[in-house]
Length: 467
Image (cartoon, rainbow, N blue to C red; front, side, top):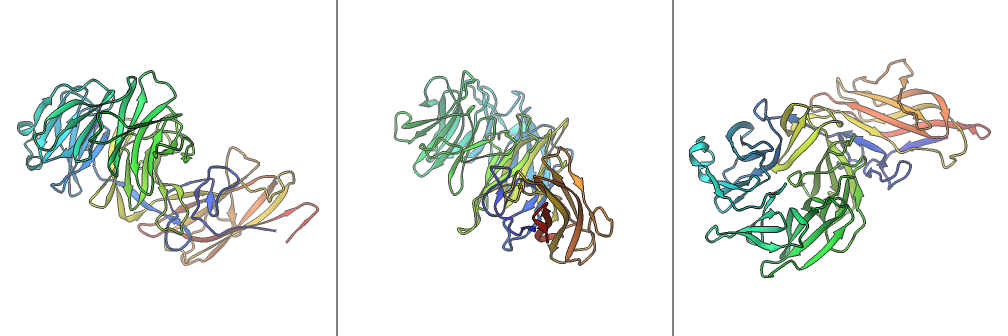
């Protein structure tokens, strides 16, 4: 008997042993949305900030002056000009809890104070002289003061309120929208003629709320409870999405549905500035809650006839999916930027157009629809496009949900396959079990990577024979 996989577009499945066509149990660094339905490596995140960034940027703001500005969790403000990062200013008020551009100014908020600088002065290297420090001092102390241009005004999360800076005179209203007491505004996004506000519960309860508001309304219009530990971030792609709680749930922010659309495979959460839209796909910088599968996930589809898929596209440059914190995730001049913290090291990565990432693919559990019977596996044949020079493929497997993977060897006895221009390789398997799992590790070289067309494993069931 032969167990073959030749579709790879389904993304990470919600279940270990089944899913939509082309789905898999887990993987990272994989490009699953190319025109050809093959398994290959995605582009890599490469550290761009050198040693300049020394705290975690929670927000990266693309600015109308052509630069981008990163706002750190200890008060540092960085400028990205071209691909060069510089430290421009340190706010003595500490952690920056929200930032954005509005009507000719860059604004940022610390605990109770807002500061700003003219965009026309942000690129001249004289921030200490130009910043209007403590421009406003009437914010309510809160963990987040996420900012957003919406409905023709500038809105700021402010405890149980939305604050507003108007367009005509930069007049500040700290309580423009009054939410239900006990709800702390954390994130917001606009859709059509409304703004959606995501909140957490002041009592740290297992609930979050979504509120909608129109500029002409005296108060919020609609509300919906979400059964998760607060709303962390909102973004709109094909749908308006809300990441809620610490267990990786993502919900439709349509003020109707209450069931998670999907979950990140090992839980975790994103920060309010840790989401963005990239080419129609929702991007999530996932970490926290002891997640062992951290990184930048995508969800969605590039074309109508493609499946909506969840994929761990990008692993930050330290190469870790465990024990790393993801901060801001932002598109700047067509380039994806990702801020991260690993131990005492910080950085901002940019998605490279000339370097591929190492990738891992873990297929669904397979039991041949006979979970009660043992299967004896002999070989696995991998068909691929001609293998580029200095690239390699390793194949691993395990039976019966073993804790560790076993490395299979080629028929020639090698632990991986790296023959230039090779179009197939057969790995030997020695073992049997009721459940069989397969893992491919793809190693690229520069901007070249293996391109897998199919994976076929031979097996037999005692009493039924093998062929």
